[in-house]
Length: 263
Image: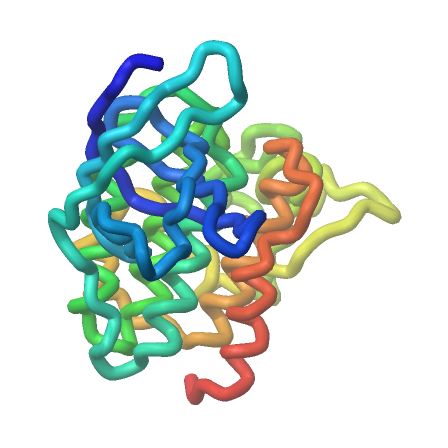
């Protein structure tokens, strides 16, 4: 097995013995990479400790014959602290981002641009004011799925390409079809088809955040409950178009969290 190095962030860990586990990393040079962490759970381990919400330099043995290589050593490069006001929300949005990448990223395909964006997101998550956390996560969600090839249509009708400004929705509400991949104008809506209602304000926020940098998103005020609905819309869109076979557990947690948060 050749010995390799790469910068990485942990996405998920699976314990399978009292001392060992499998760890899913998002690496700068290899994309999503599963590695066996032999003896890593033991307090007697002499090598560097793996840490979540941190940037690591991994030394590992890659394998061409087996599904996973294994960790040789790691060095802590940067920790992304989440202890500021709203710690529970910061951890939830950090976990949701990790879960999104874990489910969507292909294995062993370099995604250096997305990796750099993810690191920037984790940095921002620990520093931004609590009230801007939902907008920063939504911007990350939208940019990430776009970079991976998923583009919900929120500017044009998916049926006839009519611009949203020409929909003529008198009530100020729109209809989003997760299955068809975007907004559907009144003329193209079909009886019995599943739609998620989207307010004019929700559409305005989605449109802004679809193009926003993380710094720009950190200035967009949005209520926690409104943000939760927008995340639900995007999660339902992904279930139809990405082949996900399971719900985003972190999104379900955010749904519970919103009930304890004032708007």
